[in-house]
Image (cartoon, rainbow, N blue to C red):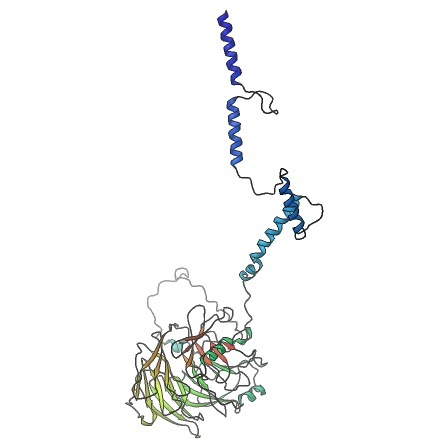
Length: 544
């Protein structure tokens, strides 16, 4: 009996030892040790978890910290947004966080970034407007089976040529003078008097030389472009362009691949935004230049005709006509009365316009097509000709009908040459543009035998079939600098020194977005033009 009581007392003691006294007043009963360990572990895990960033208010701060906070509040409370007297410390801390967040957002410049990313509206097109062409609705093609027809036993072939079936888009112009009637103006409307007055203005004497390169480079950096200096002058791809030599106002001319000619004067009220549109040729106008007083515009074309635009007579006079296409020309005299023209079949023609019946002489240079001809500015009996892959210098005094020998050779070209020009003042340099992606500068101070190459500049010339060929041309105001377009991106126009140094690159992401194959400097003003394949002229100038 006593042993049983002892066993019961031991079991009771063990049960009491497994229980723990009450530590948490919120608990109703005793807690087992295992439950207590689980609870302690959960509390440790909670303490290890980082609380989210929020505003907290701790009342258990010592006196020194409270004094520092009060002093900071007194000093900064005026700068807090929305401050009012009687705010608690929590509200003041909240306002300070708002101020810091607002300052951080302002430092990111988010409005400027969003404005830059917003798509810009396209500028309005100035000049000639696009004609809306109606698409021809062709009948639906059906097989013979769907048409309930049997198979064809005989095959009939149309032997007529394509040229006979389809009429030419631009028929050949008749020989002789053509009336000077603008296409984009009403019929029987006289040309504007302002245009005739500007056309006949006597140009100033050309100032050509070699100025300081630093001042010349600073002048180039001042040239800029805006919306009003991008105008559609012709409807198709520009093949040639030129400045009128007057210095009082700007007047530009451009010819396209369809034989159309456009004149543009900025800020003029006639035509389409100052553009007047003519059609003197039936094929591409390959070259043009203004003659001296009386001023005429000479144009040559692939249709084999050379014409003179005369505003006094209001006609396009025919200067020369050939069975082959004309590619280039130049003036053989200072009064611009004698022309030197190169034909596509390899002949060179000398035309004198001073007589009523135009005198002409024809000379065969080579069997290959001639792409460019240019006369020496001082010794005008010398002229340079680009013949396919060869560039030669000839003496006009010793020309024969056939078998002409060159007096100077400019070798080194591996592919066809697009152009070759003497330097504007002395003619001591010849600038060539070749399809082997190279611009070359030759020394022609002595025209005797082979002329040495002074500098070769690598430049991408691969324009493709839909763009006009690039051609480097001299600046008539600067003896040793030239300009050329570029096919690189972003689109640009580059000005080089004869040493190969790039003096300036014209770029504009808003207004210069296409390849300007045709480039030219104004003879007396600080102005540069560039023509693209859509018929637009881009003008960089310091006159606004």
